[in-house]
Length: 337
Image 1 (tube, rainbow, N blue to C red):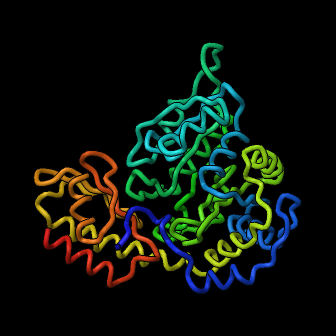
Image 2 (cartoon, rainbow, N blue to C red):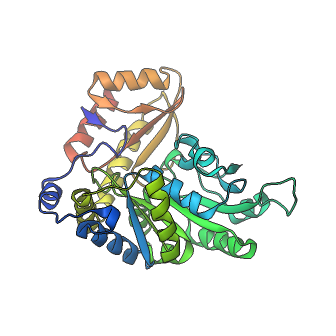
């Protein structure tokens, strides 16, 4: 099977497995795991921020970040398609007791003007707006990337209105590679950043939450409450270190492969709108001949896995386990449909 369901399906490379096998470990709850400590320092330094915290998942890093920035009864602002709203099990309400002001942005991206319009007035009838959360790249936006100038404008609004700014950067490295941007700039713009190591970077498990020292100290306590305090997890951290050292630049290959597959779909009469392919995600509309679930079944019959994300929309995600020969085989199958 050629698996395009997500970039979470990757398996560790031989080099990554060797790094894991050689990891020096300790007890991370006591902050004594050398590999985790190294990963956290490495991640923080990459973004020019003071501190970081290793967690099992991106959902946990996002949820910890939200809880650190807010009080129960507050409200946060995010796009309607945001992962924190769509795919984290209602955790915003369950973990933090926070309501959500949803914004209909452009393929998962919101503007400074929309943020400003969404901030509640000082009124006892309204929740206190305390946090803005952005997602870059935007998963349900087809891997769309923010413009840094727009993020700068959003940060200016946050500063004017005393709001915190969090980044769900699950696929941030895809954006950095696609737009040739510096992670240091993101460290300047956001109060906290969540990065995933287990998506495009290919590690088996793990995400990192990055921020200033008091923020991460608070986050560490919340991680413990959420059950995220792991022990000899340095074996997982070693995979993350290897990913950061070896798997960032190669994301450009995934982006190229995604564009080639999208071009093949564009030739088919039963394909409608295809979102612009900026990174490694392809989202397209199916019309006439198939529904999206029917097309997903047809692809599976040809040993290709994809996800119907709605009755009319298919998502395919390219990753490091998709090789050139897989892409060509996929294009050949598409041509025969």
